[in-house]
Image (cartoon, one colour):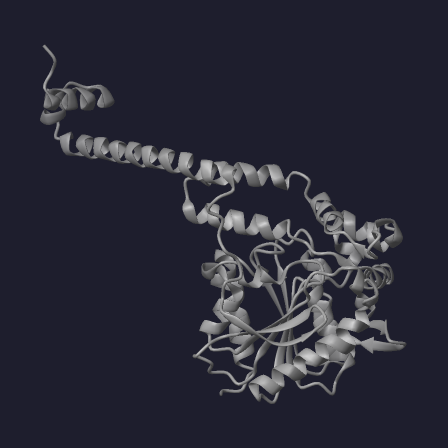
Length: 388
């Protein structure tokens, strides 16, 4: 005859403890034993639930379905020139009269700063009360192959700043650049003192290319021939750029997959993984003329020297007299702190440095950025912005 359920439960307790039930009761450890059994049952239940989620999320991931929408913060286009556009993010809660204009890199998609609603740099700035604009460069093709650094620094960005002022009716703006966009923002501020730039911020922006690992040294030492990687459109194909960044951490793809397998039961983790993975592989062509100049700037380590030749003139970072914040990721393997930190001492005005937790992307996206980097940037910019 089979045992009743209550007896089987007690048998389970006895086996787990290794002592008879009578001893358990007599010694007064029954409550602790029962609690342990309940905890074990809870762990088993959670593991079963996670197994179901692993199967569901794994099938969805392999099928490529359920991918999150990226860059969904409502916005409107308020200016355009060629493929470049200026986006204005919509908000009814603007409390600061100094708009923030975000300048992205020329080689990656701008939506990194508006990846997902829970980890959107743009969203955090809006919630803090800022009026936020962003320049988007579009996708370069043969028509853009002759775009030089001057095209962006002397032509497009000044027009975008003027459009921001016209739209916002502000007296000045804060310019915030990410990665190469930080260099564009600094050179814009240094080369155009007539523009109403009130503050400038760079995030994960290199100055010393000799401190940027294998790839940086390869560029700085002349190991890359620009014409060897420029295709028939006159631009550097995005896959070339993607492969170059993967050279910096060749095992990162494997590590990321292991982390995905460990956390594939977690819907939020999978969503973030898919979003980040999409952006990492979503490079855009680098206009050939600007690429040749960028390589030359790196070879000369011109930013570290504090001056870059643009349009036949010397643009000096020491001419920057507005407040400057230099933000870098403490664990950035693309632009290590030693490569970014020199910028702090190169500008001519008030300058501060923020070493944020995380890597090249983690300093602007993710939980750590939302808890640490972004609040620090918000506080810095708020203290130097007019109230509306």
